[in-house]
Image (cartoon, rainbow, N blue to C red):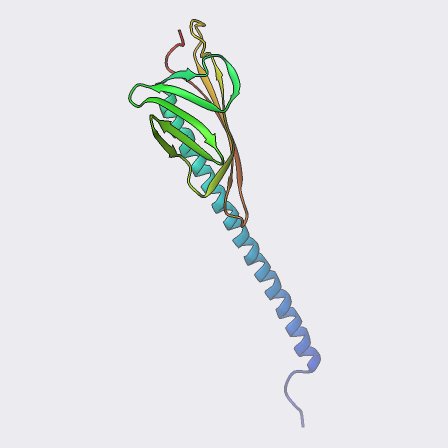
Length: 165
């Protein structure tokens, strides 16, 4: 009489094949989750940096540079005279970017990022030099999420609409 079923070797081989397939599947899933977290952190960092750069460039284009008055690089604090808001000061305090208008000091970035660099290079701000004032903004930031941190370094140069003379 013939007995039906699996031998011990067949069961062990099938369990090993199943284990290998599961290991590959789970590791691929974990890798995909890791990439998704990194992409999300990078997106947060870029959105913060782009928001800050866009806000500053909108104000700078229509303003006059108050400090520094001479060409200098790097400058930690930039003070401008805006036609509507008056004197506006941008600076890095700790790991946050501050925008000070009068006595009102606001933090421009969200708490999901921290800045390690935020400075300016000013050219053409000297009066009577007949050059278009230009400001280069450089910044470096890192996400605060410790799981797959993302870092971004950005730089942009813009020219003001008025001559410095």
